[in-house]
Image (tube, rainbow over all chains, first blue to last red; front, side, top):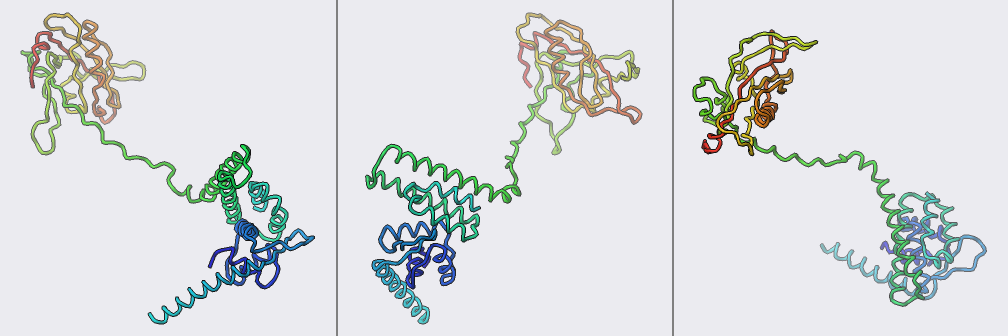
Amino acid sequence: MQDPTILILASLADGDKHGYAIMEDIHVFAGIRLGPGTLYGAICRLEQRGWIRAVKSEARRQPYRITAAGSQHLKEQLALFGQVVRTGNRRMREA
Amino acid sequence: MRTLIRWAARLYPPAWRNRYAAEFDALLDDISPSFGDVCDVLGDVLRVRATTSIDACLMLAPVSPMNLRLPVVASLTAHAVMITIALFALWGHVTTMPLHVVAPLPPPAPEPPPLVTDGRVFSNALTLYSSLPLKMPAQGGALPVYVADGVGINFLSLPDIGATYRQGNAEWRVWPGQALESFIVRRVLPEYPRGTNAHGAVSVFVEYLITRGGSVKVLRTSGPPPFAGAAQLAIERWVYQPLEYENRPCEVVSRVEVRFDSELARSGFSP
């Protein structure tokens, strides 16, 4: 669960955020601090794949918004993680 | 650190910088970057550059010689910067480590078997330097020794035994060779000089000084040059224990006769 692209999509799931806000949000909900290179590397990849897009802004801080494709990808990934989590928990209980 | 990251961000491809430089700069104003962030940016620069190079090679992007060369140069530069930074970061650890790993010295070469005087050279003499080796091995038994064919050293009778000579601040006492035998650390016998056409026996008389440190310096010789040279060369390699007289270190003078016998040297005396 340390894939920065999934973390960024999860951060943008509840609204638009710029780079620093994304970084702080991820730090709060996942306890992971993304470095600036990792953050913008992931933002670049997400934008190229069409999973996020820049929102028009006059400020230096560029907000991003998750796209429909990005939401779909996030759902699929979370479902996969959920399945892994459920399976792991069940097996831990049975052990 | 912020300046360093900004400098590192210049290594991104121009397209990346046109798109993200302004907001990346704004992000840097918001955070307190650390050394880890510098490495993080450099790592991402490498990844982006590598991706760009691969895309260019696969004809996925417009290719020009400069497009191909620039990523390589930038990548090498980024590598050099990362290695330098890592070395600085590790400097504290490195300085606590030994800077040079000293390889163990090879064992010293074994001393060649000592040469002893050819007893035939001074057939009538009673005291020769043929008693070598003086120090026997701990387990007993004789050391392997070899006879110097046709070469012998004889103690000379010294008319001025015990005399003291002074020259400036130096003071020399004359000691006979026999008295010095127990102080010998190393003795080298001369080799018969090759290329000479002498017949029979040739004697060389040598007067030598044993310094306070135990080394030997030849003061004078008498005899034909090739033989005198051979004798001097060997005797100056002798080593004695430091000598004392009345509990004071002293320098000692002694004299020996070195005799070279061409017939015996040719006959090949076996040990």
